[in-house]
Image (tube, rainbow, N blue to C red; front, side, top):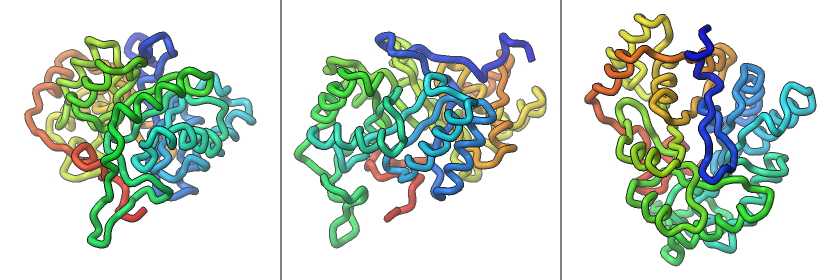
Length: 312
């Protein structure tokens, strides 16, 4: 493959010189613990070096085990990897941020994180229950803490040597702008749903202007059908460039300047999703011209994770 067209090892610099994020990342939202460990191990063998985790996924231990095994085998070093995890909604109170961070590090068996994100801008009732509900089944929110309160606690994590960068997830442009303008340490990354049906152009333009990395999740539509994988434009381009629809969608995301997460659960899918190369300009233009608009995850409106079963 022509190296100039090879997108597999592209990296995006982080604000403040805190390192660089591999543009192609492996997302770890996998319900089964054994599947998580196996899929993470496979991703490492295939060549993924960027791993996106979260305390809410309840599988940080399995991700950590797979990483530890790869490091002990000598196939990677810790410095080869970029590892992210996220603060969940029940830990937004400032006094809960550092303990939650340290607990995630312990589960992952890591000495430091490359990136720590506020998973959503919504604070839930503080405590050990990640999904607090009242007697009517409604989420119990915490009105006693603001997003900026939580962000200021996040900033203190970067002052040590155990957290290199911090950022946001599942926010609107207004929320991103508010934190960016008020923060002492600016968000280095914003993770949001993005694909041709939800290109998030306004947030991407803000990120371009302010040197923030936009990290796209659900680039393949999270398996929801009908979806972007079946879109006639994507299918036609895939045939023309002799790639799969998934490879086309991932390449589009990287070429437009974002980082992107994919969660292949089998060796074949892992190899497919890692093997991406640049699309020709006409293909990029055709994808940009897709008019369908659809959001697959409604987490930005409630803080309730759309891809995690209720009660999990």
